[in-house]
Image 1 (cartoon, one colour):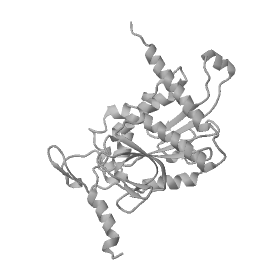
Image 2: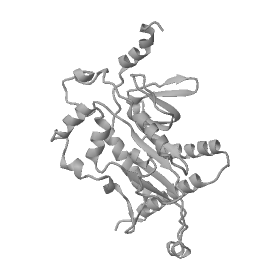
Image 3: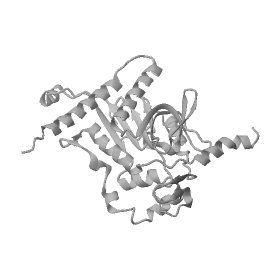
Image 4: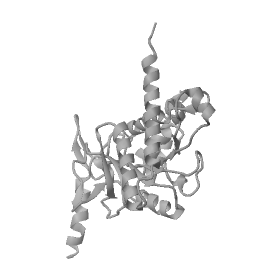
Length: 304
C-alpha cells in the first residue's frame, strides 16, 4: 500500500507558503510609498527565484533594449536567460538587458491600477524587436540567422508580461484597469474565512493568490512567444505539424492542482503552469552580436 501522506504534506506546505506570501505582501510596513514598493518588489522577486529553474536570472529595476535603439519603461523584475546572452549592458547601477535574453517581465503594483500607465508600460515592451542577425556554430552546421535553410520554430520572441497586484477586493477574472494588457495576472488578495470554516479546516485561512492567464493552451504559448514577427506567425498557423492536437488540447487549466471542488492550490498550480510556459519558450534567441555592434556604431558613423 502506497503512503500518500508525503503528497498531502507537500500540497499543504505550498498552501502555507502561499498564505505567508500574501500576508507579507499585504503587511503595512510603512507609510512611505517608495519604501513599501521596494519591499514588495523584493518579495515578488524572491517568489520568482523560488519557482523558476536556475538557468534563469532575476534582476530588479532594469530596462529592456533592442538593437533598433528602442528601450522599455523601467521593469520591476526581469526573468532572463544568459545561455546565449552572456552579458548585459551597464551604466553605473543601471542595467540594460537585451530583449533576446528576456523570458518574462514583471510589473508590481499595490492597490491602485491606472489603465493608461499600464498600457504605456506594456506597449514599451511590445515595441521591442528581437534580431536574427546571429551567427553560431551548432553541432552539425553554422546557423546564420534567417539565411539558415533549416526550419526554425523560434525566429522571434517576446517576453511574457506579468502583472503582480495587491487588490483591495477579490477580482479574479476582472480584466479592467489595464489587467487585460498582461499575459498573466497574479493577485495577492488577502481575505479571511468565517470562524466556522476555519474551525472545520483546523487552520487559519488568511490569504490566497488569484492567477489568470490570457493564453488558453500550449499552442497559444508557442505562437505568442516564439513567433513574434507577423510573417513567421502567419506561416506557423498553416503548419499542420506544429499545430498538433496535443498542443491545442493541452490547456493551461489542465495544470491546476485541485483542493476540493471549488478551490485549488494556486501557488503549486502556478509552478507547473508557468514552468510549462517557459519550456515552450525553452531557449533564448541566439545573440545577434553584429546587430548591437551596428547600433553602437550608428551615431559614430554620423559623426556624433
